[in-house]
Each structure stands twice: as C-alpha cells, then as structure tokens.
Image 1 (cartoon, rainbow, N blue to C red):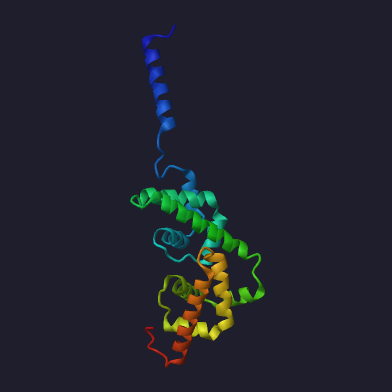
Image 2: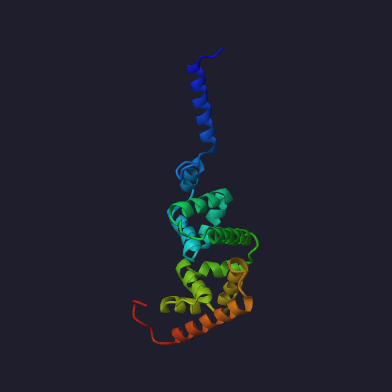
Amino acid sequence: MAGPRRCHLLVIFLLQVTLNAFATPTLEGPANVKDCERQFTEKCGIEVGNSIFNNGFLSDDCCRDLVKLGKPCHDTFLNTSLAARHPSANKAQTLAKGEKIWTECVAIDNSDKHETKPVKECLEKFPPKCGEEIEKSVYQGTVVTDACCRDLVSWGKSCHDIIAERNHDVRHPSVNKAQALASSEKVWNLCAAISRSPASSPSN
C-alpha cells in the first residue's frame, strides 16, 4: 500500500499534467512560427501585414511567396500578429480580411498558369513601383506621380486596359467591374494629359 508521501507526490504530478494540458501556449511557443519566419522574407512579411491591418498594397511576388509558404503559416502569422501587435483590432474583421488576402493571393498564383501572352508581356513592362501606384490610384483614389504617368502612357493604352482587366478579375473581383474600369479610364486620361505637358521637376 502506498504511503502518504507517495500519494502526495502522485497528486502533485497529476495536477501538473492537467494544468499543462489546458495551458495557453505563449506567442513564442509553437515551433512552426519560427519555421514559417525562416521561409518568408521580412519585406513580404511587412507587405502582408500592411495589407491586412493598414489596407496596404500586396505585390504579386509576395502573394506567390505567401501561397508557397502555405495556409497554416499564413494563419499562424495572422493570429500571432493579432495577439502581439494588434490586440485592439476587431478579431472577426481582421480574420475575414486575412482570409480575403489569402484567397486573392491564391487567385494570383493560379493566374500565372493561365495568363495569356499579352498579359505576361504587359506585366513585364510595369515595374512594381509604378504598377502599385497605378493600381492604388484606380482602387483607392491616390495620386500617380508624373514619372509613372509618363511611363504608363509610353507602355500604351492597350497594356493599360489589359492590366486593368486582369487586376480586377484576379486581385479585386469583389469590386464592381464597371466602376473599376471607369476609374482606370480616368487614371489613363489624367496620365495622358500629364504626358502631353512639359516635363515637371525631378521631385515628381
């Protein structure tokens, strides 16, 4: 028969096992968090975070890297950021935004397999910086610099229209297409007017 001391130690052991089973893991705890971080660049991590929490721009390249990384890592990053960096954010809205970003990135990754030659050729003409400026101008009403406007016009109206269609269908399918294309046409007209004006100062 077990003595009182042995029974006491057994109770402590069982209590510790029970507490460990229901303990909340720390933010540093899951090993997969660090595994995910090692496979994702800081630049893309910042882009993904800004796109979710600040409505920032997420490039096609970082979207592809995110999909390659995988949904579990995306969810881990999102939940960790919510708890550690944005505790006051609306959790339901943030998780929904994270899901939307993931879906859009999967669409971008899949589109690579089906994009036509004209789309690929036009995408190659658009440097990421100017492509971002133009897309944000169409969907967020921001200003395109004179330099990017002149580049856009030099690439041609047909490429502008092709990329506008592609960006809507792949990156912004939930936006009213007629309104998006009308906004795209407005951006083109403004840039065409700028390109006809005398060259502005280098700061623009």
